[in-house]
Image (cartoon, rainbow, N blue to C red; front, side, top):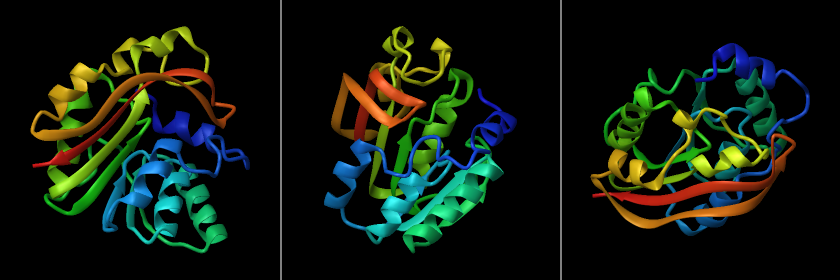
Length: 200
């Protein structure tokens, strides 16, 4: 698992290392959903949180990186939006039960030892009927150089995600290859998984 120091160093440059535009899957899905409270774990420099806030969502985000929060705050000011952003790692964030209308996990990669716990905490914080949206790299990503962890333990099979989120209903799921163009760190052919789930 990448450390706070790793992410602080990655986000230390003036450049937004994953860009200022939102993830494409989130960009196409979010405007079609009823607005409410949304949580972005591991949000980094804030591109997705800023997008959601601009649509009128009540946005909550966290990341372990202080550098990430600083850039997210600057981006929010640039776009004239606001949101709640805390410094926390994903395992220790206080996931209050039945609080969120949506959780968006965009390239949030965890080792198997803690992955299921974090994913189930994300389900716990959703209200009944709440939506979880996920995009992440699959194990096939190891043959590409477009980003993501190089540790197979941190890459996701759909079958494992289905087990993590077994109490949710599946509205959409797909394992596919796409052409990423989110920044120098996310660029080129990529093997990913996508999920949209609803809490029963």
